[in-house]
Structure formats: structure tokens, C-alpha cells
Image 1 (cartoon, helix red, strand yellow):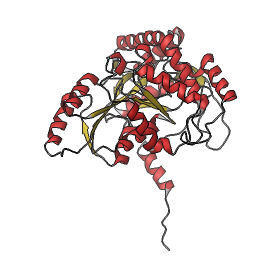
Image 2 (tube, one colour; image 1 turned 30 degrees about the vertical axis):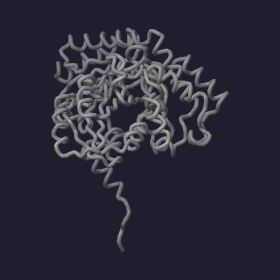
Image 3 (spheres, helix red, strand yellow; image 1 turned 90 degrees about the vertical axis):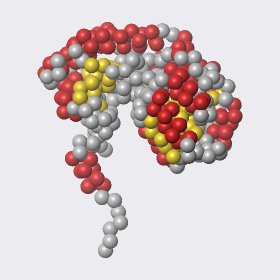
Image 4 (cartoon, helix red, strand yellow; image 1 turned 60 degrees about the horizontal axis):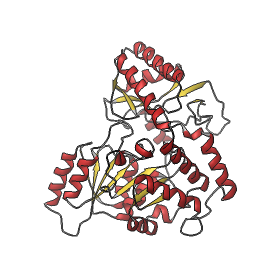
Length: 400
């Protein structure tokens, strides 16, 4: 008899043989210091010794902030723990609308629309626009890549952070294009594994020359730069970027995603983006948490604290002899081959530092690294412990 099932055991074994199998590591709290557990599978969680966390995206340290917690609690008590339905049915609340007004103000746009995740925002927006051609940076996030696939668009991948390569690809494609085509250029602003920044102004120029629309994903930049905005705001380009998109789950310490732009864009998306239309609205407590976190990012000193911690770590690691890429709050410590990165990562973990190695296929072969992500709430003692651990790990692994 034929067997048309799925041999998942074999598939898992193949991933393990290729060193691609991953496991969950539960954390006791989302905080600068916490305890982790080995994957319990279906069993009880047994937390181990406390570690200092340098591998999270909680950049401003607000996920455990009392002000954000209180906003979450108020929303749960007064509105409810969940939206209860799609926002087009009965799941649209005043909490959602207040967050969207604040996001639009921060992003200097007419309106904003909140999705259940940044991933949903990307795939929903790209598929709803239904472009004929998408020009996508080679290092764009998986949610952008999947959005292009689901849209069934012709996808042209241009060299990473290379506006001239983009322009060349557009010129080549223009030779065979018809007048009715719709083109979309998509790029992250801050790239999550490299800490580098896209040349947004030059990309704006290239897109404008061909009448293409530009979508910038500010997932790792929202809340970090001027007035709680992203790279688009830092560069004064809000009026030149057609679609600003991002997440509420990193610096804004919550869950969900957003799209910001002009009124017709938002009206079109709330009617046609399938990941919005056919999904329960973002939980009101999450919306309230993101709104309070955005307010703190815009008015408090968390951004200043973050950048001070970033500079301390960058200077300390470079002084040891490590190569640090990027120019942002994400510090990729470049180690080269997979084995070296794993050796350094194991020693960091033994020293109580949670900063897992990043290796292929997440990054290209030969560029394995430790991705260090400081938080605004890391103390001087936390930073010193991190630097000491890197120095010992580098010496023991033969890197320094």
C-alpha cells in the first residue's frame, strides 16, 4: 500500500545532520537579566542560572517597564484581553485608534494602520498592492521575501545597500516594461544581522526617477531615533517614502506591526490586505503597551541611555581586536567560520552571557558572528561582564 504521509522524523534528522535543527529555550522574564531553561518539550520548565541578555530586540528595555505594564493592565480591565474579532467586524477599539494616531504623528504621515504582527503587515501590504515588479534588497527580512512570493510578483533582487545596483536593475527592466506596470522598491532601513543602514535618500532618488513606490521597513529602527522615529525621520525623508512599515515588538516592547502613509493607502489596505481583513485585531493590551512605550521613547531618556551603552560596548570590543560591523545599536561581532562562532558562543554562555551565535544559512558562509544587542536598561556592571566574557572567550577560542 502507498504511503502519502509526511516523514517528519527523517526531515528532522536531515536538519540535525546539517546543523540546522533548533530548540526552544524558555526564559523566565523578558529583562536584561533572566534565567533560561533547556527545551522541556512537553514537560515542566526548570530554569537554570541567571544570564545577562544581549541577544534580544528589547532595545529600550521597556518590555518589563512598570509604566508599560500599567498601561497594559488598564487596557485589559477597561477594554478586554482580546479584540474578539477582526477590526472590520467588532474588533476595532479606541485603543487601536489612539495608537494609530500616535504612530502617524511620529512617522509624519496622514494615517497609520496596526496589524497583528510586523510579518502580517509586510505580507498583507505587498500582496494587497499586487505589484508587477518588486525590487528587493538582497538582505531583506523573510517577511518581505514571503510577501513577494505570495504576491506572485516578478522579484528583482539588487545588491545589498547598493542604490546604484538598484538603479541599474531598474534601467534594465525598463527596457522590456509596459506602461501599465506597477513597481515597488522594498528595503529594510536597519538590517537586523548586520546593523547597517540602507541608503534611503539614494533609493528615494532611484525610485522617483522611475515613478516606482518605495516601502521602507523600520522594524529595527522604530523608537530608536529622533522623536521615537526611525531612519526615515532621522534623514528627513518622511515625505518621500510612500509606505513606512514596522513592528511594535522590538523597541516598543509589545506585539504587532504597523503601516504608515497617506489616507488612500490606509483605506485601501484596511479593505484589501488579507492578513488584516481576515485576522482578529491586535489585542487591546498590546496596543496600549505599544502606545505607552512609544510615548516613553519620544519623551524620555531611554534612547540616550541605549546609545551610551552601544558606544561602550563597541569601543570595548574593538579595543580587544574584534571586528564590529554596522553603525547602529546592533553590534555584529564578526568571527568568520561557523565553528569559531560556535566556540565563542559556548564560552559566552558558560560565562553567563546570552548572545547566541548567528551562522549560515541565516548569514552567508564565512560571515558567522555573535549579534550583540544592548538594551538601555543594561547597567555598567552588565556591560563590564559582557566585555570580560568576550575577552576570555576570544582568547580561549584563539580569536584574540
